[in-house]
Amino acid sequence: MERYFTNEEDCELTDRQCEALMKTVIKQLPVVMEKPEDYAARAEVMWAGTMAHNGVLGVGRVEDWGSHMLGHELSAYYDMTHGATLSIIIPHWMEYVYQNNIARFVKYAVDVWGIENDVFHPEETAVRGIQKTKEFFKSLGLPVSFADAGIDGEKIEEMAENCTKFGSVGHFIKLNKEDCVQIYQASLER
Image: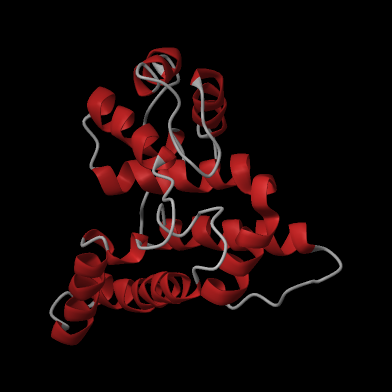
């Protein structure tokens, strides 16, 4: 997802590749969770993972990676897997930044989740896409809040400080320490 959320214009091919990858994971990962022996579903998820990490989806765009950095701090402080930290952070990061480029989030809602675009209320379409993301993570049994992961908020300031000790993070919007604090605080509860 960090690759998809860009402010770059005219990156249709990589947008479509990112969307195809996300749609494949949305379709196949529940199958893998229910039937781990399903070779075809596992192969699709593994191929998606390879494509997500080989750099081709970042061609022609400035990738964000802010949510990724926020997640690293959760891993460092609470010994959580990276995927679980992202299932917590990504929806809250989305809620925090979507107004910076509502059209990008509308595109995500429509092209990834198949949500009908309400052209008179684009913000509602964008928010529905964010909600579908959170629901998907929950359907997989992943945490979507600190509370789900049994984490208190005691280390928020420290994590935000570490996350930004070399400067702001992310590119969709630059996140400073206070932005990181706000996203972590929003992540406390569902």
